[in-house]
Length: 224
Image 1 (cartoon, rainbow, N blue to C red):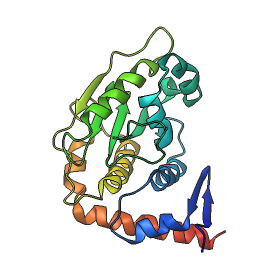
Image 2 (tube, rainbow, N blue to C red):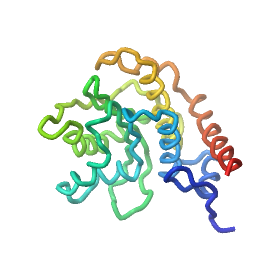
Image 3 (cartoon, rainbow, N blue to C red):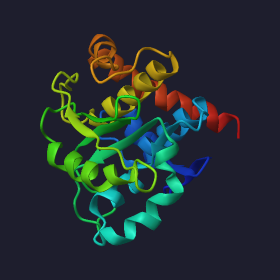
Image 4 (cartoon, rainbow, N blue to C red):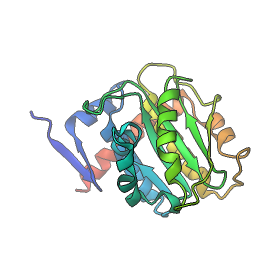
């Protein structure tokens, strides 16, 4: 059977092969992460939070013509957002669709004016996160008032115990950070979501994320 389309959700199309990825211990692809970001976005409908699709994050980080980025990112309305979440991938070849071998998460928090990088294999994606940060930081403020933001590599980010769960850690981090922001807790550079992340994210929760996303897709398929 061909790799048939099984679900269209917002602007994301999932295929049979995506279910296969979620059914086994495999590396998540762009489509699954984009789907879950889109699902979280629907659950947190405030315009304050933006989940940037993986393909967009990748292009921003690796755009061969930085001068063209302004027109590209303008529709994303970064200056109007309080929280922006970017997936980071170590693929640097813009001609290779769904390349790379590792995912991590870069989060911009406007209240603290910081970018925080969470990498479930410490240090693996540092240079790629820095590239994305440098590409996007200047677009976070309104014209003439771009914030002088800082990049934090959070060294106590929960670590994966295998070679394939990095994408699931990204989804788990994103979900928890959004819930943390919705709770209205104190937000400063020294009192972000770090303690909650350390307490709640681990191998068992991440394993549950795979089942959760798979069940979510199947439930949505039944509602078609």
